[in-house]
Length: 223
Ligand code: TMP
Figure 1 (cartoon, helix red, strand yellow):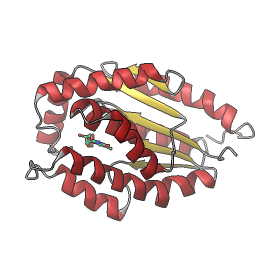
Figure 2 (figure 1 turned 135 degrees about the horizontal axis):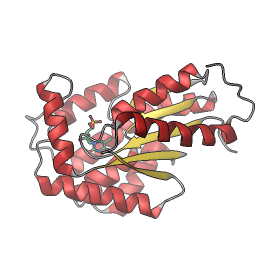
Figure 3 (figure 1 turned 60 degrees about the horizontal axis):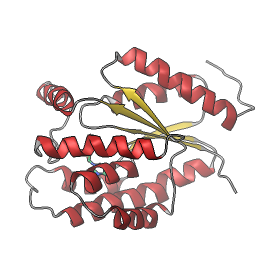
């Protein structure tokens, strides 16, 4: 049986602007009167936020890749069970800033962990929950890290253990994302993150509204 809600995720390398786009989309859907929630990974629950703090602490440079995948997956299991699945079952739209594709991109392609093992762990953590629609904001990793560093220096963003990894790691992550998107074109929409924020948001809204029209045929816009 198809669940009732609609699950949208945002993915991208560091500094791609996906958090801004997810927030703008959330505000827009709220203004149209849709039942919608916005959340993020890792984190999004009290337990997940504590796991996030462990994962992102720059002092934890000795975390093993296997520990890392299990911690990201633990945070994911908690948010799926406590937040995402219940919201979808109530018919809500869920927007999540990163989800399981980040694991394939970062731990799989970035660290080189075995993708089949990651699929098994991810399926166990999520109970097989896959997004209906995934936006991927693509940009050169140097540009993304430059943007993120500048945001950190303005006090608007974290500078995490992941951000300080070598350039080659971030390049593998980006290439991984492009492979993931190419392997499932009906779910992924690739966007050029160098375009202005407003242009990207217009395109995102257009795609989402078309898809929601199918998923919520009786919805009349109130905004
Ligand atoms: P961000 O959401 O602020 O970009 O921070 C999340 C960081 O965690 C980012 O560096 C990507 C990383 N990450 C993984 O490595 N694997 C995962 O499964 C998730 C959700 C995030």
